[in-house]
Image (cartoon, rainbow over all chains, first blue to last red):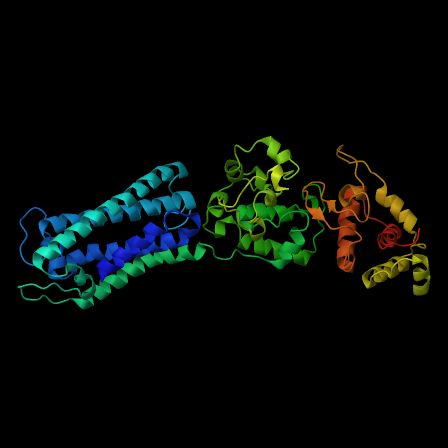
Length: 332
Length: 127
């Protein structure tokens, strides 16, 4: 069963690896595979007789119904490649998407390199699969049994006496592995595409002259300062009603950059100096570097403050790179 | 008082109830009879920027005519035409924007007289 699940998990990850919108499913598959690998490694220490690492005939001759030497090395290679995929995957997730257990830790340019390794390993496992299928077919013919059926019933026909299935240990181990990975994974999965916080009072009070900027784009200190200085907000005296002001302050601070882990919030949280202007912050400037002045001055854009000119999902509070496009005169 | 105000509004469309309420308030605060022409003149008048930038008028953001689609001069955010349906339906909003926009355009609050003149002009009062 482990084998079948692993094959499904790796297969699912393989099929969802290429498109940006499928990243949620891809990481879900990856977390599933991580749990399975963790289980298998542990099982190799406490599992059924022929599953243990001690039973793997890596450097000696195989005996009994367990893995042959070739099979042992092959299994180890598979586990190694897949484990590598999991580790590189978590690094890429943390460095490029700023999500998951390593969110924000790897620097983005290193993450890109690791991404190449991750892709290479994906091809490696495909190559391995080819060899593996050939090997299982050949061995099934030689032994005159359908070895692949062992994936379903966990048994192999053999002249040796049976070994106890150790189902209890298996269940405990599987549960722990899944729980451990789930603990890091489920919070991350909740972030993927979950609705962003919205507040009708904020939209009304702060969304009439410009986009009601999502609070996670600035640290809490910036929002506090914005409200402290609402009497001269970019040359306007907002004259906010005190109740409205208090409500805005509480909501903005509760949803500021420090309160989330996603690619925008993680970059905004460490901004120092409580700046008021989002377009003056380092993360914004980095994200928009290389855009010529002519674009900002063009009639379709007019100003960096007009996020919607290029970000169709700005009103929802997202600025997904996959949808961003500089408008051209032909779009009019 | 009310019939007199309607008389002043002349052949124009009936003002929304929010506007009526505000006009009554302004009158109670001692404003003289309102005049749409005076409102129009003030709407179009330019005032200097205290920081030395471009001069500004109501039309700077709201556009040259009441039917113009306006645009926030700094942010480019679109502003519905002043004569669009449903405009001026909320007294609190009217007061809020009078507050902000008079302060920004003129540097001080508008008097009840000025606000009344504006409302008459904006609701199509007789000239």
